[in-house]
Length: 225
Image (cartoon, rainbow, N blue to C red; front, side, top):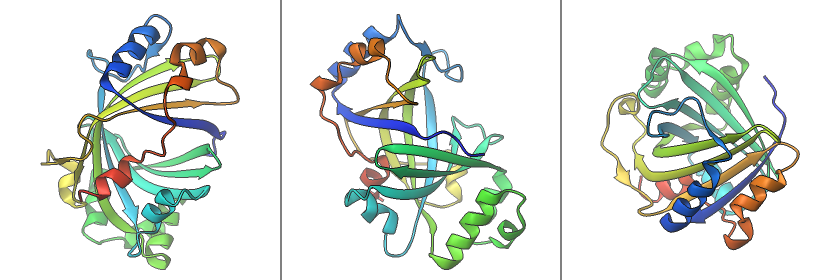
């Protein structure tokens, strides 16, 4: 289903920045309802790229209009796996998704993709076509811990991503797997909102004190795997 484009900002921050921001946000914003008792969840993503590393190069070159495909699930919940396509154009992002089963993901990772052409989900069929015509293939696994905050006015979502790790693109993606730290000590602050960022949240974040960064968890993890 099509979604409204959203503004997306990224900032690389220190652990001290994270603690200060978290302390300011907690009284005003709500944790995402899907988090555990610690306010966190773990994100597991498998990214696609082609033999020329088109997706990676477009990100590193700062191309304004680009897209990427990934398969994602949270914590160890294999009952809710999503294929996602993220389309970005000049700082605005739209995400499309379609459900996948664990067996379908395993089949894809084995190279069995014929079933995708007959999928009832247009996004899965689109990925199939691009795997055939643009040589897209599973490339890298990206794991990290996320702490998400929500604020209803402006549909604001603020997340802190840490413990970023990288692993190979194989069937171990759906199992507990060894991963290599890819960004030791780095924390990524992401802010997403619809038409406007409420002044209250902007004041709490005080973004003028942080350097906007084209930080890409996928690109960082490709340096490792």
